[in-house]
Image 1 (tube, rainbow, N blue to C red):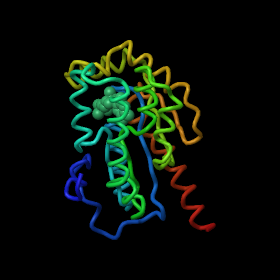
Image 2: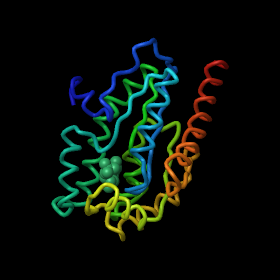
Image 3: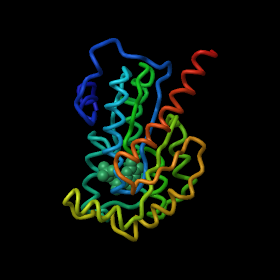
Image 4: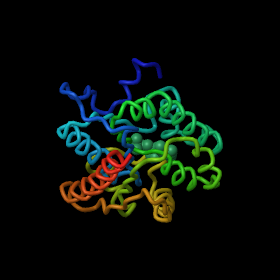
Length: 230
Ligand code: TMP
């Protein structure tokens, strides 16, 4: 991804607001995680919009990216067996490496709020469910920035699949099959990092969003206090 492609991974195509944005030293890094069909993308867009209205410079992005590795990954959704599980993991890591270097780190250094749809907890859950060792996966991710907040949206796998089929009018792909999503959900449920906030994603969009914003307001307040103290 070159600089001009930098914009192409943005989820909304919007430039930061024209008025002078409110910048946060070191930025604020929020990620949305969970199995497929939890409503991550909907919540991410609502949050990005709200934070822009509040005057923050927001970069909304996602993984897999639209870059070269992300495009290779998307091909796996129809033919997962075309690479080994080790190669699959390496593709996600290479995609993240490029994403971090070209989009995430520069935006955080500029003082933006970066909101990312999936990050390394997804690798632990999905490639872990695919048989890769979770400690090895964590080790391969240890040099990437740690999020200030990871919101894990939780729903029953059957509910997630129902949403994929009925709301998005799509057939679940290989990553989204029920047995796989059950394993993935099981791994997400064991995660204990202190930056994780779990929210029940099966409630209405408005109710889920209220909890999402509460969690974000808490980390924003912490960052502001740190700023005042330092
Ligand atoms: P999505 O764009 O609909 O969220 O789909 C991305 C798919 O990629 C989803 O099934 C989860 C999977 N995935 C992994 O397996 N490992 C990862 O590290 C990431 C970021 C996504």
